[in-house]
Amino acid sequence: MFGMTKKQFLKKSKKSLKDIGIELLITREVISQETNNCVDLEKTYLKMEKIRKNLEEIFFKYEKLNPPSKCKKLQIDLLNAIIILQESVVANTEHLILLKDGSTELSEDKLKKSKDKLDRFREKYGILSREVDLYLKSRK
Image (cartoon, rainbow, N blue to C red; front, side, top):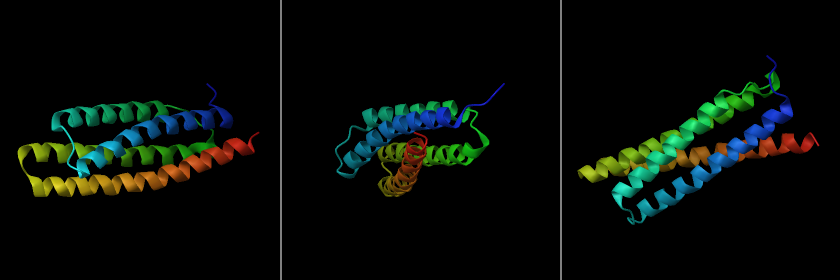
């Protein structure tokens, strides 16, 4: 079976980045609310679990793609970026569980870890977005 063309793969990558961007915005909003202590722990936990599941779905769908050999690095970089965002979401979920259990100091460490991972992801996301856009524009 033949793989995808570069253009097809880049379009799928662009769509995946768009889907990830939506989850990123929701995650940033939740973390911002947590920083300002404006959250319902149960609702926020459920929201973060939904984000985690959505990211998992995006990851597995993107992982199944069969890109041309020239684009394999892009696929691996994007998968690694998704993992970083998932780690941020998991750390945030752990923060909520610890907060609910009354472990304030440990929960603050998890929240900081979540923020750090989110910042790292945002850097990679921006680079990947620009790279995909650049490749798509040069193909026209």
